[in-house]
Amino acid sequence: MTTAYDTGVSRTDLAEAEALSRLHSYLRVDVKADPTVPEGQCEWCGNVGALTRNRVTAIPNPHETTATFEELCCHHCLKSVVDSAVEAHWSKAGRDVLVEVAL
Image 1 (cartoon, helix red, strand yellow):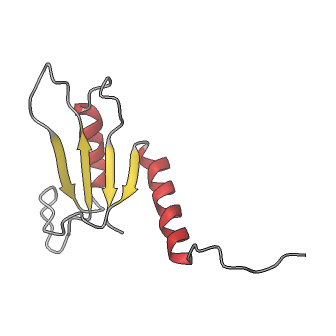
Image 2 (cartoon, rainbow, N blue to C red):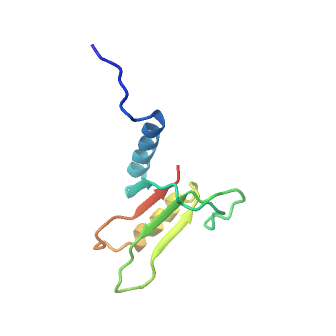
């Protein structure tokens, strides 16, 4: 017999966790929710109404460049931006490429 009790986890929290898990599986990089991702026009595609809801960061090889990789993009451009980040990312950085998503 099971008893219904409050777990403190809402259906919204579960849906967000599922979405992040699927995105992680698809992109094969670290993914986390971040409501502070600034919303603005996507510069990657330039489509009218395409809003930035993702921030992608990578750590390039410090022996090759001093530039950082941090890009904002819409959901449609996310895969292309992640591919660019993975290409630019230094394998010895100590962490994977990170995608922060404003859910």
